[in-house]
Amino acid sequence: MDMALGRWLSIAAPVRAALADGQPVVALESTVIAHGLPRPQNVDVARAMEAAVRAEGAVPATIALLDGRIVIGLSNAEIERLATEDGVLKASRRDLGAALARRATAATTVAGTLACAALVGIRVFATGGIGGAHRGAAQTFDISADLTELARAPIVTVCAGAKAILDLPLTLEYLETQSVPVIGLATDELPAFYSRTSNLPVPHRAETPQAVAAIALAQWQSGLGGGLLVTCPIPAEHAMPTAQMERAIGDALAQAQARGIRGSALTPFLLAQMSERTGGESIAANRALLLNNATWAARIAAALSAAALSAAAR
Ligand code: PSU
Ligand code: MN
Image 1 (cartoon, rainbow, N blue to C red):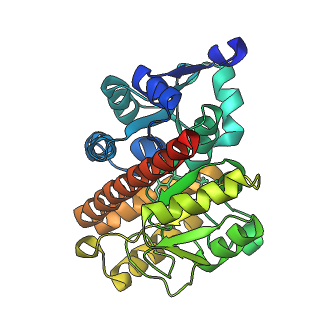
Image 2: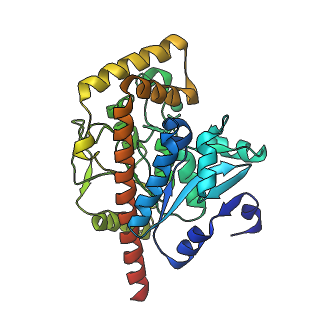
Image 3: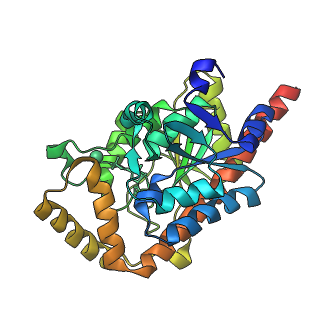
């Protein structure tokens, strides 16, 4: 790493070693910890995601900005700090430079995490739900920078689709425009976070982590570059009834409208409203899908490492 970058970036020793050896590494985001889940469950979920990655033989790298440095691989104490401290910012890619310059502490969104992970060559990232086109985006233009960063960073992102607080058809359209391949893992449909299905077909399907790795390697080794989005449905035993969720979403959106919540505050507001309106059950579902995604991401990272190492040995 060059000196200039070293000033702004710290890589945890196990992450650095794994990257140097071509061993599997999985990036994890931090906005879900600081702004997506309530305390105290957020700390527990963050640690459990790391454990799920390790259980598959990969190295977790939770990413955030701490006191003006990009940290790739937070320690337990750093995760705790991010989960409990007040005033932690939410940083998408556009916010990173300004946050670094003023030595801020910030959780990184999917877009922010992808941008940071790409700096150090991490190839796989696990999250819960991606940001997307909000309902009404045709008027407001509120489309998450997650969708453009998914196109830019050469990383496989594993998610459970997107929450139905968003406009899912519009989100898929925008991913198509950005040329992000959406790959259903053993599914033909875009999962809708709490639900396994949405009736919206995804363009590609893969049955195994090895099949996902093969698509990613073809895209990267051919020089096409860019990212890929893998969607894993929530485990069936944790899926939630759609009608109940739709009522909560309707109420949450009405509150946001009434209070004039817009811009980067909108997603955290809707997430908080949803957790209030659906109670503990949605938190348990959220936890289950995050751990599931971390597990599959680690398996994809292992498949990518194995394929790259065997190619190098040939
Ligand atoms: N969706 C969720 N949980 C989350 C987020 C989205 O179900 O925690 C977070 C992610 O970090 C995502 C961000 O990248 O919200 C999107 O924010 P925005 O819509 O402002 O881009
Ligand atoms: Mn937005």
